[in-house]
Image (cartoon, rainbow, N blue to C red; front, top):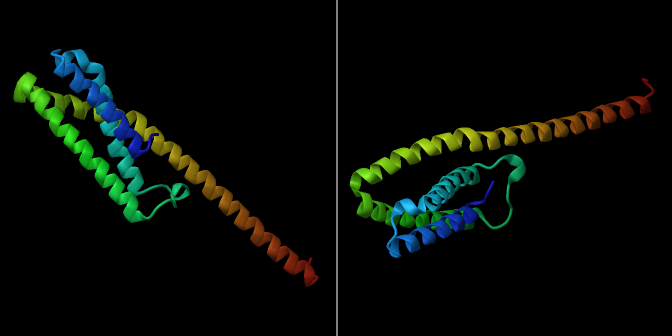
Length: 159
């Protein structure tokens, strides 16, 4: 899974390729791969943003303060929103408003499919890791508690 800054980097690269293709006079249909890559990066950023706001307990980051992390996510989000607005203008200019609405419908369908496949799998992995770490902590705690009572009882001569 990517971090938000990597997602923005991928989206920026794809966006620059799309702009170069369009400014060279080629049609938007010629850059379907870059559009797909840009859409994935945008979707991944939104998912990463949600994960950063509520990370699993084993993945708490202690680098920087919460304010720094929030400002970084805010800045990257605004950058992606500006790209999205420019992408809307490009698509509307080439295909009209109905073309942009069609793109939004396709994008929503792809985002749902990606959420069902990729993001749900990552959530399941996080849940398994949480369970394993919790079980280990519980086991170590129970063993320490058992050992403490055992040695305390043996010192008193009870067993």
